[in-house]
Picture 1 (cartoon, rainbow, N blue to C red):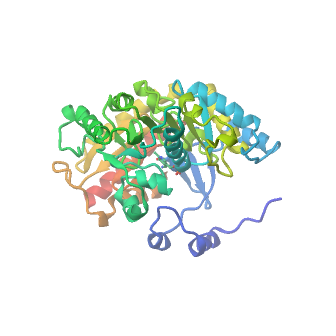
Picture 2: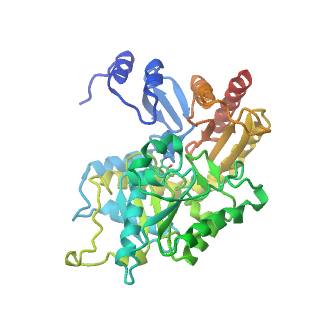
Picture 3: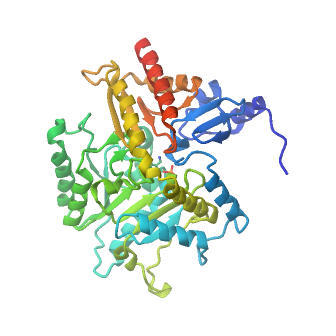
Length: 457
Ligand code: PMP
């Protein structure tokens, strides 16, 4: 049975009357023309009026193999015919078990335990609570370890724990009084080096700052949290080579845990299945979400080591249980979508496709580099940011009221390409299944919009 369709005008009106959209200035939304997506095919979204848009940001950085992929669609339907939902509290089910096995096979060595939750924020939140509890109940407890190190510009989700780690004032400053204190290390952002150094000398300086924090708080740091290789919400900030490996070395040296938040960079986005692989790093926690289900359904996983797990391996009477769980954690539909997503990686050799596509993207980005109002372009695999600036020489930003990033994206939408900015950094994160010609079209539209909006400014 299907319900009769509601006409687009009524939908628009009801949206404005009732919905409150995330990360959205509602007065701007109310004044604008809401785009209501009705269907999708591959890398294209189709609105209620039948207009098609290239999905330049993979829905929200999560759609890996395109929309309505037949393998993933079929896997979800098959699972629906068995059971849509059952809890992981006191029960288990085949898809979650098989998925855990598969994730362990694929993840960096040593990550043998999988704890499911339902989105990126919870995947990181779980790692914080597990790390905290681990230090208190391991064989040789270190109960003073209560603090976390996070980077400037960090973004790990919107729960209070993750917001505590957060370093983006626009999102996080409002809530500071509610948050637990965090040791803040400088963001390794060479274009706008917080230490005022030049690119060539910045690597060790950044790491020295982390080491300084660890030395200043001996035996007090529970973990260092990082978005490996690329810090997404900070503005697609690509870390200098060796930074992640250096952080792994430091966390080992000072006996603390490394928490890798691969919510945005995992599942092929940077050209490898997991970003940690670029530097041969095995973290103590690997936080996964977004692309895990191909962007289909909410599911997340926090992976950890036998060392961490063993500190919780006890009877109920011993009181070491991890007292945490979400209703939809590890849900069968999400797990089925995830298993199918991983199968598509194998069947379509997705990782092998990314290299050539990323090279093609690099060529397009080269065309932006020479523009008067482009400060820097940053790219790893199919994840890129184009930073728009008022003045290249001084790197001065556009005044925020000019909303330059937003205007570029609005114009791109008129021309059939959907992208979202982070301030004045344009995000390029298309599905990994994008074709070469779709990539060309998307980048041509973006180039035209950047020129028109910034040159007219
Ligand atoms: N960590 C990172 C690095 C992210 O980019 C995001 C979301 N953009 C999150 C965590 C939070 O994920 P979610 O929105 O699924 O809660």
